[in-house]
Length: 315
Ligand code: NAD
Ligand code: UDP
Image 1 (cartoon, protein in one colour):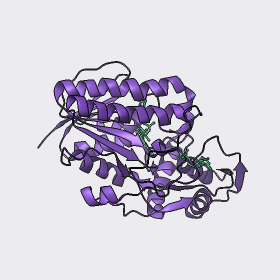
Image 2: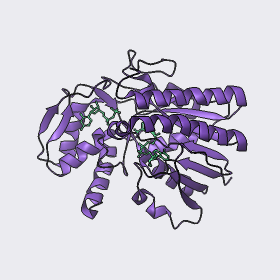
Image 3: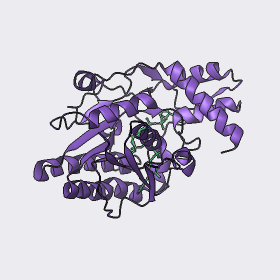
Image 4: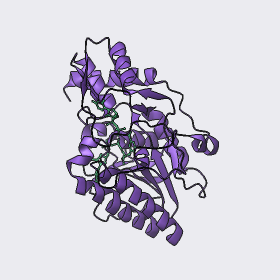
């Protein structure tokens, strides 16, 4: 059935990949974005499609539209970008959620929140399961993002309990792939761009901290499966690739795959940088039959091709 779907943050990395997939499935898609970290280039190739609309709007302000589903992705996601204006980041998560939940309540739409593994902070249990409450510094530099997203989760469950809003709370773990912003400071984009330019690879700390990386196509597929699942399945649900790598291993792999002459340089570890992170995805496996299959090497090769193409275009 053709649905009308609102994607906030639709011009960003994940949002633009999601908009494209939803259009390909035959839906009508409205992409709402204030272009803080998103780019027109991410969605230019979609703008001549008749069932695609773009709206410049900030989610901290109310917005009204009639849709069947809302994917609420608006929020800067990279540490550099979300710390650039910490107050605005909190407002985007909290007021953005209030506005979108209010809309969902009024028009009886289903709403999915792009929450994050950051709600677990620097976790004391490993791997992280959905019933772990987290270990977050409430006043640290990352707290504008972590606590904003935690408050958003609280709002989602309150609207669900009090107003019967149909919610889906998805805790996304590190995701990468084409249309990542090359300047947003995230580890995969940094390492690939540095390697392609034969510049030093910047490892923060000694590189022993771990992350697990999910390729974007698989994340988008999981998001849609979750949205389409039975109403009782509210989450919170982890989604990500459970295969864990150290940042040092990632750097070596990127150098090898790009055939780069780059050297590793070690820089100070940012405050509150989580030491390890790995999702327990048994809920997504059992409930959605979802599990990542694309290996880090295969996903990196596709992402390297993308960065080569935009570096050549000078974007
Ligand atoms: P991104 O920065 O590429 O995309 C975010 C989008 O939201 C951008 O297009 C930006 O312009 C828009 N935006 C920001 N503030 C806004 C506002 N006030 N009003 C309207 N639009 C606004 O980041 P992404 O990686 O695509 O992340 C998308 C969502 O997924 C975010 O909510 C993020 O927290 C979440 N997430 C992403 C990851 C990841 O690894 N990529 C991991 C966990 C959670
Ligand atoms: N990182 C790094 N070099 C970089 C960028 C990031 O070593 O140029 C590290 C960072 O300190 C963190 C990990 O890579 O331990 C992942 O960082 P990212 O900003 O991509 O995401 P997050 O910390 O939110 O998982």
